[in-house]
Image (cartoon, rainbow, N blue to C red; front, side, top):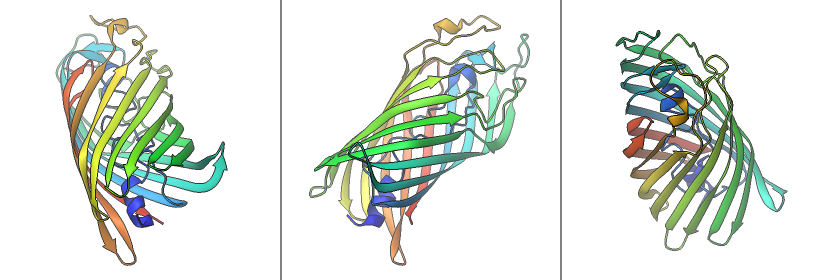
Length: 313
């Protein structure tokens, strides 16, 4: 497969994504379902710089949850976001693996919330709308090992609270705490038949939100894809995810909810396809994806739609 094709398919798929954090403490996290599960997740392309831009829309509902230290009722959230991922892949070897690094910047184009969101213990129904930069994701360590049809990439990254947060607002662009992530991605890819199976695992450790004295519990996620590379210009498949908190939340909550009872989980799947469009002497990858949640507990649940462009310099 030529470099542009590899670049268009795998551009930064293994790394994390920016976090809009609209759910508040109990309804969401830095991990956004569906943003880490596409093609050739464990594969490194040739050495170089890779750029990917994602525009995505989600429409989620959440039941009773904790928002900024307060117990609130159900809510609906809709958002348009744009994510830019810049990855640097090298031929430098570390422990027998190729080294790389990546950074992800997310901008909230428009987001709004409606339902029983509150700014005081009394509670009332009110909508909110915001825009602005979300939290920054940096992965300073990406290590890739490849052997025949097997590809594995180890990742070590962190989310920094660089977005905007105000505990008196129902909606924010930052989660207002640091998150460290360790994980890896594996791909089995047969270039002769064009068939692949990929999976991406991550473990997230969250620090406390200093403005609310609330800490979201430890989390794990598994994103997966089964796909057929029909040709060098077209790939299609099914991708999905499973998310779970392995530790309950911690913190004082104003209202009837107990943080120690909150251990969220969710799972979903949907179709994904990519076209490699020739442009001059290279190509641009165009990826379309939809993800539909099947079930969820203590977490946002709904639909996500994404359109991505990727390019290798």
